[in-house]
Length: 318
Image (cartoon, rainbow, N blue to C red; front, side):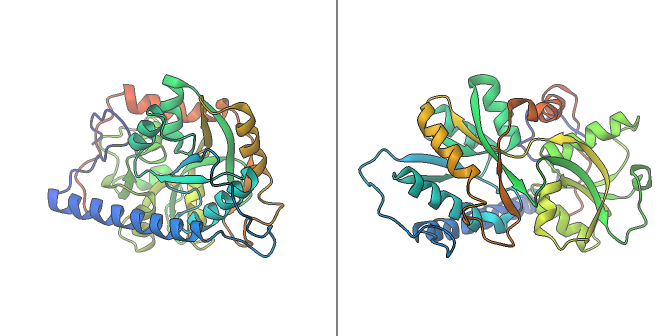
């Protein structure tokens, strides 16, 4: 059953403490490993054949502090985003310092303490921080040429499940985020179903873990961001339900960032695709401009998480 949670950021899992500890340790290890790889590659300069050669950066200039967490398009896009940030450093002719966040709460603290100037932040963190302090969207990633994102409920391509009703009493994996628990709750209530008794549920902390469970046949379905499918072979999953447009995690600027720097960062990001910064074959295919209104449905899901009696999905079967 769904259970009261102060925010989507806290896992709804009721698995044993030992299993929860293992899951958290594994997730943290993966994130830290990705961070180390990204940092080492980022420091190397990332000159690509198509982009301008590395230039000497003015080390005396004020650094631009950039926060980054999970990358749209999957963990494999860390390297592409690092190339984008390396080009940003060259364009600004000033150091770019990368700070890694493993939670929405961490992203919020970094902004509130003025420890970062710009961040690629989750839609939930953006909605949360913008509601109390105001942020400016610089640009948003485009994944596989899709200008927007959505929450989607997916099954294996060969599954005999074709619609939500076919999943009654079946095995379902969900994570505690907008595209997971909140979207599932919204969808079931919109269809007149009781979220407390519809699925046999496994709760986890990761959309990628849930997709892996579906791929192995451990569960029948899950809900994730559509952009998360980019990391998997095309045609492996089939979408059976889709939300209204759900804003892609944006690059957002602190209200303390000056207008000229904001414009320079935006120019660098928007030009990344046609300047050859983004490698061929990447799930990240560019950046586009966006507005605060692009996150209206994210606010609907955020309100469900904050204000409804969102009871936890039942016992985990990991």
